[in-house]
Amino acid sequence: NLSTTQVADLTSTQVRGLTATQIGGLSAAYLDAIDAGDFSTSQIAAFGATTVGDLSTTQIANLTSTQIGALSATGFGALASTDVQSWNTTQLAGLTATQLGRLTTTALTNLSTTQVADLTSTQVRGLTATQIGGLSAAYLDAIDAGDFSTSQIAGLDSTAVGNLTSTQIGALTAAQIGAVSASAINSLTTTEIDALSSAQAAGLTRTQLAALSTTNFTALNATTGIPSLTTSAIAGLTTTDISALTTTQGNAFTTTQIQAMSVAQAIALVSLVG
Image (cartoon, rainbow, N blue to C red):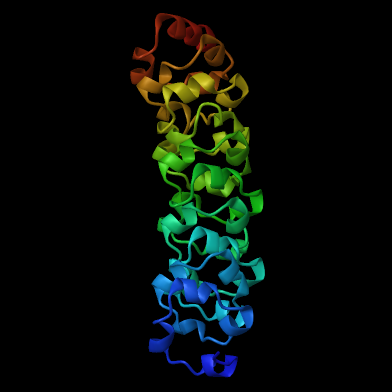
């Protein structure tokens, strides 16, 4: 029986005495009369899609980082992109890795690419491979590739790997390079493979080299790529791969690498370099 004006006059202590059932039963007019900053995190966590949807744009824009971090995946999914994009960097910092990992791709992309670029490494590592794989190239490119965990990299399919920019590929660590799945490794362009640093080339695995197409394998740089391959990775090379190299690339193999080759591989190399 309280009027909306009276509800607006409730103190934060009084507002925090309301149960989730009471809040959920309020009409949009009554809900909008409450200062959103007066809601406790436990109250925010209990908000369903309808309650969140009834919050005004002003209320949503005034949520604190702690309150934002309390939103359930269902509640977050009820927010419009314009609402989410009203949050500043400080507010976005409230999003937890667990919370982000529970969002649908649609809800996740309610964030702007600028906001996605501002996510911390901890937040990025909360994303699942399915979420990452569902991002458009524009969203994927907004993420610092160094923030991805090796398990996330391993879960990327060929399309997602192909959507990474050359800058992102160049920023990957040896461990991240080694985590790219065999089914996705050929999504790297010959230019990106040629640009791999010595450390990155050393991260390539036997499984990856075995999966690389001859065209992509022969893109390895003679200075930074070929001589940096580990002896265990060398085992993944086919004689066809070796025979397709240039003489310069063939001569780039180190003594240690040659000693690790099979008889067939060594014969193919000798035939190449003479």
